[in-house]
Amino acid sequence: MKYLFILSLIFTVDSFAARLKDIASIRGVRENQLIGYGIVVGLKGTGDGKSEFTSKSMGRMLDKLGVKLENQQVDSKNVAAVVVTATLPAFSKSGNPMDVSVHSIGDASSLEGGTLLQTPLRAANEEVYAVAQGSISIGGDGKSAHTTVGRIPNGAMIERDVGADFASRKMFRLTLHNPDFVTAARTALTINRELGGKYATAKDAGTIDLITPFSYDGKGVELLATIEVIEINPDSKARVVINEKTGTVIIGDKVKISKVAIAHGSLSVKVGDKKGGKDATEEKVMVLDTGVSVGDLVQALNKIGVTPKDLITILQSIKAAGALHGELEIL
Image 1 (spheres, rainbow, N blue to C red):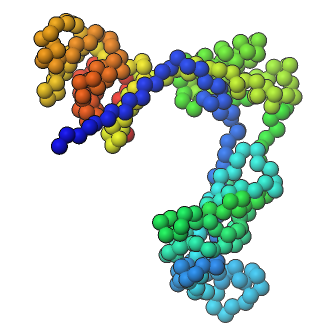
Image 2: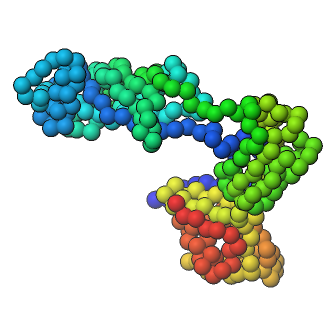
């Protein structure tokens, strides 16, 4: 039986322009993770049952509601202990809703049909930023879905404002998503050209400091809106990324190969000393010029039916021989 191998290749090209907002972030403008411990009630016998921490939590909750019990442990299969998580957006304001995720931490078999009781959500500094409550949505038909995890759309209410006064700032700091000295220098030069003065300075490979020009004094939002749409040509390292499971090879256009000869099974490949002729074709010997890119090599190998597995082995061997000039990353 013959198998058809399909090789997936993605060539990345650095000579393109990207908006500054897509390659960098502004220091202080970010999301924050929230977490809380809560109780889900109203389950159809799919709860935690005799879980100790669930029973004690129910007892304490009933005590706060004015229900006094001799034994504070409450055993019920209709109740489950959960961890509630959420992502607090930047510049969130008090009163805005947000989605939350609910995760069972006991032995409950399903949270379907349950209702989360009022749960404070805290950030890493232990401060409460939101309160969650509501009916849990599992999604799907309830059979094939992961029923111990659910969501509550708009299930939390933000309790305090998040964000600083950006309008009156005298200085902003930009952080590149992929630190690179060339990209940092280009970014500073492009911003200065746009603003008509030396206001931006590259501090290191991933940081650019921006001083607010006099014309934008008190107009920090307008300043950021102006520079965020500036187009930058980001630079990157020469890199080959291989996913052995899917047979996908992602190749940067700056990756080059030195003079090298490869023998792999019945295949023979030479890079350098190019000599044409019928003999080379008949012997399946492929000859490429010195300094060709990995993309050229891969395209040549693909034409003669090299499988993804063979290609990955060949690239690893070229790298081991010191002839592949760039990083080789295997996922």
